[in-house]
Length: 149
Image 1: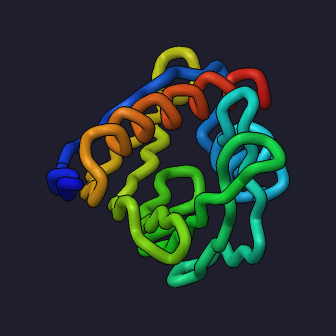
Image 2: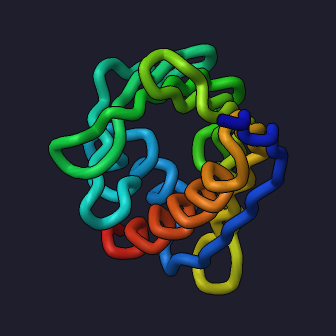
């Protein structure tokens, strides 16, 4: 059995919403609200512990509903209310890291309300599937955010 190739990529997704940056920031900062819109359909994010503060940590499980076997840890590196959130994220399975990312959420006012841009600089230890999953997951989260707002 061969070891998958280490993969690196930068994933960027963006959407515009007809609300202020403060409303989007509030939807992210409230962990119960965030859990409702970050998971793709048929999947769940279950927060085990949260601390949405500078140098705070969120620990969570994610995956198909009832089978959330992946674990995640976010450490907040920069938080500027209504402007941006920057964090590192590690996704693991059975304590073995699958991917580590540096993620930035930027909230920029525009003509209709706010442009949200999410950039994930990802290092996958299990090949390109984690990168594709990150792109798909972030796109779905931003689509779900529109409904949540």
